[in-house]
Image 1 (cartoon, rainbow, N blue to C red):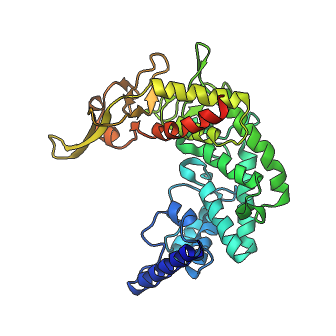
Image 2: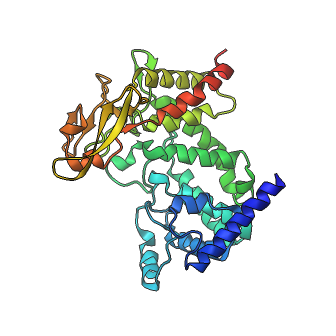
Amino acid sequence: MKSKITIGLLIFLFSFSSDRTFGQTPAIGRSWQYVATSMPDAWYGSEESIKVAENVLLYQRDAGGWPKNIAMHKPLSEPEKAKINDDKGLNDAIFDNSATTTEMKFLAKMYDKTKNQDYKDSFNRGLKFILDAQYENGGWPMFWPLRKGYYTHITFNDNAIVNILLLLRDIKDNKPLFASVTDIENFNRVGEAYNKGIGIILKTQIIVEGKLTVWCAQHDENTLLPAKARTYELPSFSGGESVGIIKFLMEIPDPSPEIIKSVTGAVEWLDAHRIKNTRWDMFINSDGKRDRRIVQDPKAGDLWARFYDLETEEPYVCDRDGVKKKTLEEIGYERRNGYSWYTDAPQEVFDKYPAWKDKWLK
């Protein structure tokens, strides 16, 4: 094991040296998600990581969270820094697209290496933001403070709530990375928030004729019913967002009977709604553009639709006009190619399910 660690460190140092030789740095060219959470351990605390951390501190909004879809490791000019500082009061702190939880994980890594109090303070402002944003019923909206519109719905979309719960779980369990960075005032609130989060997952699971199914990408924060988001994101059974929820529930070490029933019902529903022997096909259309479609192929695996109709349980796609269609060919080029309408992600659940079932369904 020691030799593997040594070899890995040497490879990283060689890569670091090589990047510098060619005018690059280890973080350049990588995604922010990767830089924040997946760089070699030796990188956190480095000169480059400290510069990145300065950006992360700068981007943190007054509310305590962070905006989304920003490459926070990108070097900033002085005018850019001034603009970001002026934007601190914007109401765009969000949980969508792994925002806020990603920055907090990065800060925890940085504090672990440097013990810089600024990183700890920023992390705890982020954690307080998460705790304050939670609804009494256990759900979380997309933005906090609340913004009018579908943003107030309980947001499972893009694993927003799952990402929050995974972070709270690690803090609650005193994982070494989070034990020293978490203030006691916040820590004392984490356990209850985590349990309430699990509770809202169980309360929002869609029931059809007495049987548990899956979830919608978002649920009304008051009625808990499946809710609409953007014009092409209608109330539905979600074959996409439900995957992260199921995987999270399956990782609970001592699941209650309610959790076991929840997982079992969701897996059975997904199993019954496979689109068998189907794959994506990329092609050049009659306009000479790169396009895509799904095709039947006896050698292919299975896909699942991101959305299934709440009444018929049939897959559908949708353009920006909000009209449901059965096939990709019936919607416009922009939405056809600009959205994840089908996914093979549920297969991850089925890969894990046999072992889980053997353990908990005796």
